[in-house]
Image (cartoon, rainbow, N blue to C red):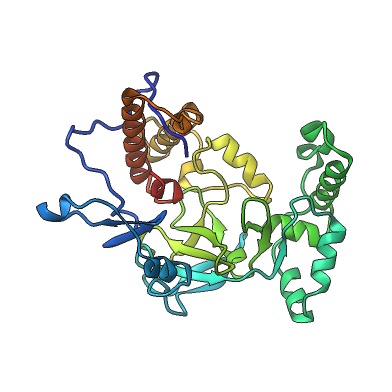
Length: 334
């Protein structure tokens, strides 16, 4: 995430000069982030400690799901009226817990896949797995006026247009299909590919999520971690889109999944200073910071002033994320 400062927006927080920043809010005593260990600061001696490179064993433990994996039966899928299905906590789940780690049922490694490619992969599944795939939710039957493939995507190559038209047809079709199910439930497995995970697919969206998903290429699994303490009986949620986007853009993304988000961050006509309004302001500022520094952060020979502006921006953005209770990957990268 690229970040910098801006003089056009008054920060929502006024921090003293000696405010300390860290990642202890992310997990518990230690956090493994991008190969570094950050020790919890709770004594004068430890306050002087600097981040150290994680050992090979620590990185292997992280990658291979040891010492960090939650036990079984942390969650279960339940039917929700007017919502289909959702995943709920069976016990209190502490922040930083790995809730589940799941291999994909079906994978499309080529981002230019067509319906025939998906049908080929589907044919390789057992009858039980095929039935499980077909049981997943599908966001078909949508209003055609929202998904004009020509107006929204031209100009495209012939192959790309064929793919867009296939997916457009699946989205507005009256019945579910292999394509509409994949569109509705797929999750990224790397920079280009995507896969469908049966258990992860039952986790619903919130713009104020209590969990975070990430794919581990070494284990070949999608991992779901809690980013805040989840009480027994609470629904486990993840964010399907960029949380920095404004309400309108998030709503447009949710249309791809066939629903309208009704979380508190998306409430309309809320008074100034309300939780929804403050959430809008914080996300606006986070998007502003990110957009304004998309190029600056990659400068090869930055000046001291430039580095200080970046540090200040990172600090402000980290605090905004913590205030917004979005302890997601962007916070770990700061």
